[in-house]
Image (cartoon, rainbow, N blue to C red):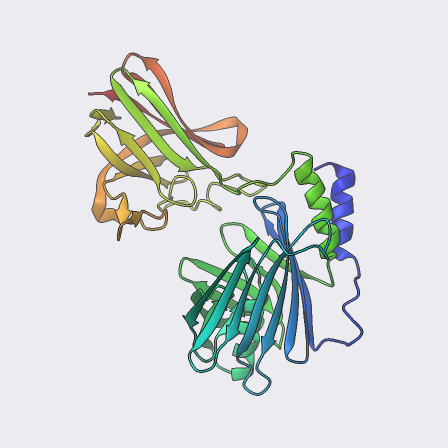
Length: 390
């Protein structure tokens, strides 16, 4: 992003905007960053028993969302979650799509999904005490933190309820006078909160950070980021999938993985901690397939399908070849490493490079017929091991 455009975006992040004539009882705005890239912003306000939430999300392309939340006046339970996808050009244009959840009484709700001329309606289960949740929104965590503050407890488990009827448990825990953690199934956020539970800032070790600001010009940012998209500067997928398919003599070798970027973060020892098994990329586990037996380093890897993990330390790294590629009939997640499934642990030649690499890269460098070098590189670290057909 050019400097003038960056300055304009920063101005929009802090711009004052009208929130309506009635002063809301609860309002705020969040800026969400991954490293040094802003990936979304949101603004919310409550008036009576209703919340209005506006979001602009930048991944993979810019989208504009408005959500209307209604709470039951007496119980405070979720009444309606109406999630609307707006056109970037005209807020009064027909919606691009919408999802609406309406409590139907008792332990059920009706979900109506619209996309173009298509409408789908279904019934989902709900239960008391659920907190409304929106994709890429941090308002639900603030509502959970405020509930914990009001209860006076040190911890509680809450269930987030999305407009599609999806649910997720979150454990909220007080860890200091002004700090809380939110433990999700595969992620832990830590937040600094005020006496009422309002979030001042939030982060998680993989690099996502959230900060509260007085206000944001959501529509202005949507137009600015939409213009970047139109100019070929869309942020794109955060960790796009890629593959390496090559021949080593008679063998065809394929590696499928996702490619995270550094985005201004310290990678080794921080984003990728030392002494912990790493998924060797992002998202799903990295997969190696070969139709012939290979020798990686000095270890024989029979023809077949495997997943690759890495164990980095401060001065060295180890490649882990796992026999497990699926779990419960689904492709193995990058967080589901099981040491009992190890086929081999192979030392990697590890060195520091002078020119840092922004995006994680795996390649196989041919050397001679049936031989080559498997190379993993990211930031200032390069890790290599010879590979050949057996």
